[in-house]
Image (tube, rainbow, N blue to C red):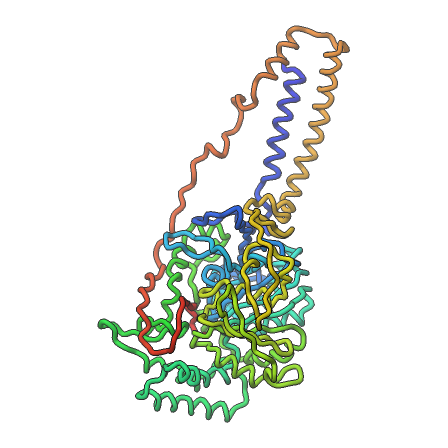
Amino acid sequence: MISLGCMAKRALALVICLLVNGLYAAPAPGSAASFYVPNLPGLKQDSSHPLHIYAGHLPSVQPTASPTGNAQPNLYFMMHKARRVADRERVILWFNGGPGCSSFDGSMMEVGPWRVDGQGGLKLIPSGGWEEYATIIYIDQPVGTGFSYASTDQYVHDLGEAATQLIRFMRNFYDVFPELEFMDTWIAGESFAGQYIPYFADAFLKTTLIKTPLKGIAIGNGWIDGRTQYPAYYEFAKKNNMIKPESEARIKTELDRCTKYLNETATNIVNIGECDGIMNSINQGLIQSVNGKQVCLNVYDIRLVDDFPACGMNWPPDLSGVYDYLRRDDVINALHAQAKTEAWVECNGRVSQQLTLMNSPSSITLFPHILEQIPIMLFAGDQDFICNHVGQERMVEALNWNGAKGLGDAETYDWDVNGTYAGTWVTARNLTYVKIAQASHMVGFDVPIVAHDMILRFMGVDFHALSGGSASIPSSVGGVSKPGIIFDDSPVSTSPSSGGRNSQTDPNVWRSYYNSGTTALVFLLIVLGIVAIVYIARRRRRYGLLPKTSAYTDHVDLEERVPLSTNEDAEVSSRDLPNGAQKRLNGGAPTPPQQQTEPIFDLGEEEEDQETPRTSQH
């Protein structure tokens, strides 16, 4: 006969198992925890550099009845929560350009916390990741870009449509992560995102669907205003000794053709076909033969050359490793990206082709209205050709905003980071322009610490409130240094909305377990009541209130000496299960780009590494 003590202990063991299983049950679909990424294959995390990642798909349109086989538009996101405490919590939305280029360019080669390690895995960068003091959300859009998906007949055609889908996506995103909706938010990106971002900002400022406080936008080497950017190709090339005497007549012919068109029309369109020949003719004049191979200028970094006709499309050198990594089955599963049936590509040509822009005025037309409400920062690496800094400067000179034209008499200051000249900085009437020295089209790839200092300054981060990490790197604008930082070597402290590697430390994860945990807790309380009754009965027996029998005593002694782990009915532990084999997706990955040769063009005294995205246009 089983004693009450035995029954109580077995019941208690059962309840503990139920409670643990309840608390650690799979999170409900659509909950924050269902998007949690506890680890990534090939990434060794560091307790002093914790990453807290969420990723997956969310709809970007209202659910509708769809013909069988048609996929509803879903955008893909990857979120890195802030690793350190700043003066207040901030959110950055990041977009790459193309159009049709994945924001994994930004996360894996520009402003994210890691880079490919050349051995199939990832390596953390010691500093420069924008997730250090802000939660950053990388979004693949429009639909079809990166891991985002939709039926091809549901691709986006205009920038306004892309903005509408983003707002719907953000509504769904905030339903999952409600704590982020009311945090100060910035939108940032580069290249053709110079078209996306102003449209997105305009939509954020006008919509009633979300209540997000948009605080500013930042655009790096952006394609914003073709009317000033196209003619700037010639001016930039002349300044950098990129025009050979035998090519100049042909280039001037293309420039005159473009200028004539611009003078005859006042429309602001995104792409101007009559002006495409300027850059093409400059590039044609720079083709040379080196060791029997034709090479040309890298249009994303004029310090480099590339095989003709790629002219920069094989750059940056990390790109092949990014392809390999994002096509691995285990990585796709870890990132919750299985719903995209096609293999990841950096830039989707079909997305670019479908974005016809027939009803999309150039984003420069939105600047005056946006600048009345929030700040804009334009930043440009000075070694980029395709969206060069000269075009950015001519655009600002021609722009009327907040009661005046151009920067006026605003003073331009030198900017230094970590004892090195980083570029120039100027602000006037809510617009900041930053020219970054020795940086390419992808500023964060070349000078991540400089780029990080820039975004912290633009967001108005109180450096007095920071400790350790990148905050300890000295910098100054106009000779005025940021406050001295007390360096803290202790483990990283995280904000309430961020955390370490363990999913159980995040409020979102605990919230998703609440329902299942509550059921187990109620059951636990019931059983604890039974255990309490048994315990009281045993104490009464011990003090003579119940009759003693040697059989009862012997049985209790035996039960107290037998560990629960000897129970033959116990289930197999998870550590007894074999590890699942992970296989890599084969096929479709690009051939690694060939080693860049040394610069062969006389472009002045330049230095440093650089890089650029595989954008299909800009």
